[in-house]
Length: 339
Image 1: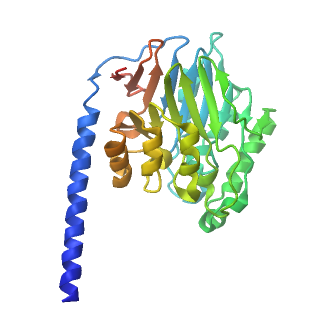
Image 2: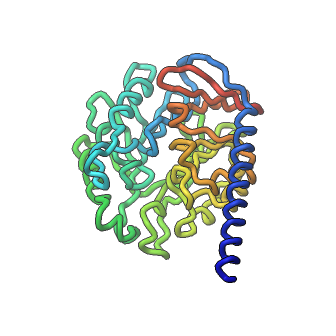
Image 3: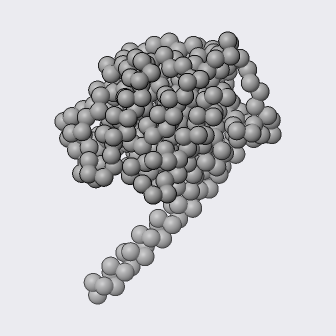
């Protein structure tokens, strides 16, 4: 009798999950179609205000561009990832080539006002050494939050080599005499026509060994009435999402935290930020069902993936629109987000 009840319960639960997943996919397809996608090449406009989300698999590399100023937030995974010593997929050359092609100022020089590794997982900091070591790239300063081994969980501390990549990055910066700013600002500051604000500039150590993701620095980008939040690997671990959500507030665009994995984008976080657009640095198929559910059912967000679109540019126009352009390496289509 107990076995029959357990079987009935499991079958009912799995059926319910299956039906909810179908509903989520249907709503996702519906919301994505709210915005027309028309073939149109990317036109380089000097002084544009853009966020470039590069296609670096399930790693982060985001280039900020505003009024001729450029900054790089994370730099993708590297082929020498200590966590995956054999067969690691590196995107360092893709990021390097894109920066050298795109981050060109009015004098024809490749200049980054700053770089920011949001935290010290390889899939965020890994590619920075190639950027730093390139003699054709000028970096004015590097925001590097202090590395704290006490926040690492057991697996990170034993096998991931985060201290190694951090030290190698610092060494590369010091070799080129690039100023390192360890005391990250938490007040808004100007960056071209954008206003930027860093969040989680000081890691809450009340829960040691919660994992390096708890150290993630989030970045809010504002132009006029339009806002975006780049959530790095911010997730519910250590209660980070719940602490940050009321400080960030409502946004128009969310770079989904932690590549759309299950611990990110909890209901309270999505309800508070309530983004119209969500961009994931991953494939759509790798976003966990609960993350899709929260974004679609709570925020009615339109979700786009860097892998599926081969990278995405979000352009903040002077008339208050956000225009999303996909296939940023060949410039083949755009998605216009209405006011």
